Image 1 (cartoon, rainbow, N blue to C red):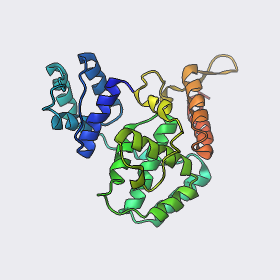
Image 2: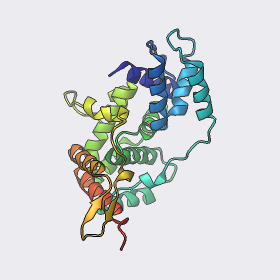
Image 3: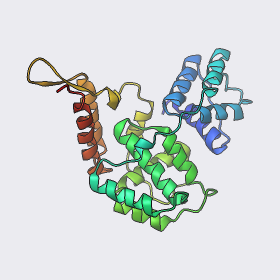
Image 4: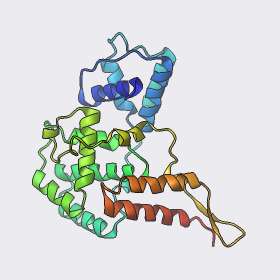
Length: 266
């Protein structure tokens, strides 16, 4: 994990969890990268709060021009979470999910945890890691948060076949936010499981977004894709996460192709 990544996570932990973190010295370019990742991951306000909390540290020396950019970003209206991410592409799982949501009180803290897990899962399968819902999940799982019914949550995860993806998310929470594994209602992956390579997605600027995958029909009889690189990336992603959520990774890939095919003119 490089220094920019380490400082980014330290500021995020300070802003989200009131942690006392030690910042390492960085160049102006790397501080700019921290700002970019914070915006990309939807956690700019939390990272800026961490900057304010650790402002007296000697090595937290962000150029004035960059601090002004931070202030302008924080002053923008808050973008609400996308509720469309609260879904499953596997029809059977989706029916079970809706039955759970309808049967549980809307203010249930256990249901809030499940929703945060589902939104995190949706982003992992579609776009790569997106920290905003993962932070919200970690905040819900703090010991000081409202009581979570662990047995009910475990039953839901089993019903939706989410046990393995839940372990992955638990591992990410432990690695990124340094939470105790014993405090989580679901176990992380075994200690010998390598998730560092998966977590590299968090700071990747190279992968194409799913939204760039579009199919068109030319003058011939064949269907073409406007971005073959995006198509290959999506296929590799589905294969990569197959072990964590088999039933959803397959249908999610098919659904992404189906959405793209709707752009073909009749």
